Image (cartoon, rainbow, N blue to C red; front, top):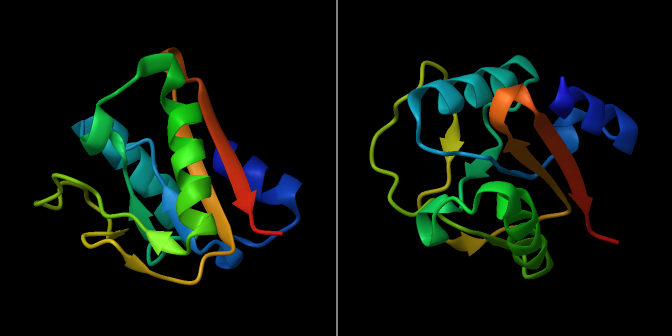
Length: 127
């Protein structure tokens, strides 16, 4: 619901999203739920990463820290690889970024998941 609301509020279509910075805790339940949400909204082919492999889970600060890094990556037109990713552990297909590379990025979806089902999604767009 958070992703759908963010996409709707931004006035774009899900197909306009160039990359996703997932909450991506590498836990079976969270990763499965995020993957299902992305796939159900037609985002299974969108390049996706998780940044927690670089600095761990900063709890309440995770969404902000990862949003800032995602904005910098977007400004630099870079897909950042998912550090530590080696095995696909979810039931749906997703396009995990396994190598940092240049890529045209105009629109990024950032997701965050909190305790008790408090989820958030943010759309970052280049101007």
